[in-house]
Length: 107
Image 1 (cartoon, helix red, strand yellow):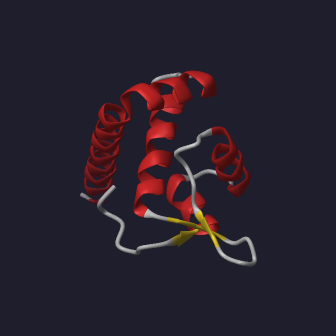
Image 2 (image 1 turned 90 degrees about the vertical axis):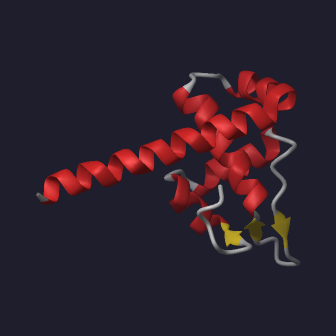
């Protein structure tokens, strides 16, 4: 997801970006081996661009495609690049739709 500018995001920023709770991100960290945020000495999690891409893909598979967590794990293991690309496309199209709806409402 290239629209993000920062190098690292704390868990609350990451949760806000995706509209999920912090606890869900912590749970996914345990469930998905690819999701591995940096932790400092105090245990504070910092998510990278790659982590955001993985989270976006997990959300795409579970919310848009209807996969279970196990199904999403299997799909990410076998076709991560394909699913990440599709997830990014869906996210961009959703952003365009939201922008157009806002523009329409302002007319």
